[in-house]
Amino acid sequence: MNWEEHSPAGSKRVGNLLRSKRWQAAEIEAYLWELGQERVNELMASDRDALVIWDESEIEKPESLKAEGLCPVRSSKARRLKRIKPGYFNPPGGRPICVPGFHWLQVLVTGMEGGLTLTHLGWWTTRGERATERRSVEQAVLNKVADLWGRAVIHVFDQGFSGSPWVSALLSAQVRFILRWRKDYNLIGPGGEAKKAWQWFRGKRAKDHKVIWDARRRCQRTVGILFIPVRLPDHADPFWLVTTRPGPGQKSWYLLTSDPIASTKDAWRIVLAYARRWRVEMAIRFEKSELGFEAPRLHTWEARFKFLLIATLAYAFLLSLLRNSIEPWIAALLDTWCHRNGKWSRETPTPLYRLRLALSRLWSAFRPAYLPLLTSG
Image 1 (cartoon, rainbow, N blue to C red):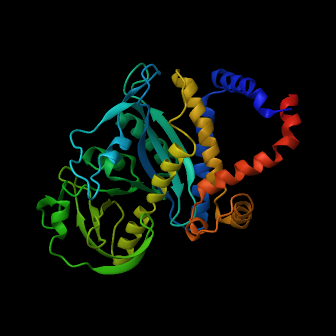
Image 2 (cartoon, one colour; image 1 turned 180 degrees about the vertical axis):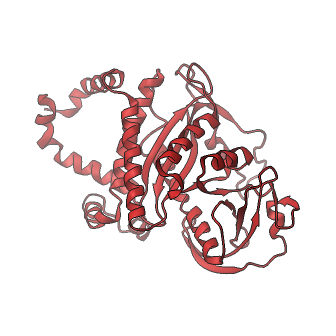
Image 3 (cartoon, rainbow, N blue to C red; image 1 turned 30 degrees about the horizontal axis):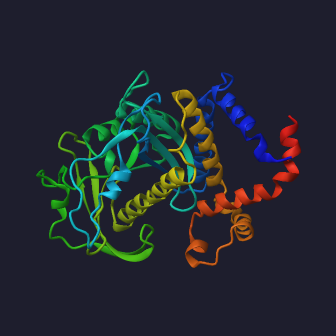
């Protein structure tokens, strides 16, 4: 019996599954929150910091017009193609390019070391019957996280969340946070004067230096650090601003945090916690490239949402396999079904691409033995 001969029937079963009223997408969402709760409990039991990392992205459907819920999103692909390349002339410019698509919000739980645990992954639109606003979506997730974990976790946000409105929401929820602040936004320093974030550190020498690993460029880098107490112009609550000096040609981070900083050790903890955010960027790239989150061609919103959540379950499963407790089993799986001789491939801290390929080859090898059981029902 040839498996490919039954692909139309298999596609019909998947379609019936997506249209079925016997299950709702909320069941998968609740399961993901349970995974996050288990990971937070594990980190708290071992007296380690639990980081809740937030990130936003878009699903781009540039060739689609009829799908339900399409809205304009800024194309990251177009922004990447418009970057100036050394040695080439007449670089493209102009306004950001918008294409049809959907917005998404992703929340993951991790520690200062170890793998990621997917906790929430949702999509939303600004048009149609299901139209909503960005802040309302973020506020709903923030309220749920605050109710579950309160001040037991540290929330980590990228620069896209910077601004007084989101800081006000964080203060209302009474959560701890690390927020990458825009360098051109004003902050009030110890003397009561308002300056742009970068101006508070102009002409000052770093208080400490440390050689840390740059995960993005895969190299060791000597980084300096400075910090001062600050507050926002429209808030009386005290905060701390931490900045890095990564060296010539590299951008500094300006990190606004609600945690008090009494020493350089506390400041380094903030910087290293934010550095863990790079794992989320890698996760988004994997979801778009390997799991094909931008590939589904489904007209209705509900069917598409269910389909993406099923793919999300597969992604959450792959992340669970990268936990430290089963590293020997993962190493054996990769060496047998996706062996690589290259040093970079073998030393990658989260080999999700190799792991997915290894599981696919393992399934292909044993599929003939289980095919009668799958088709008998």
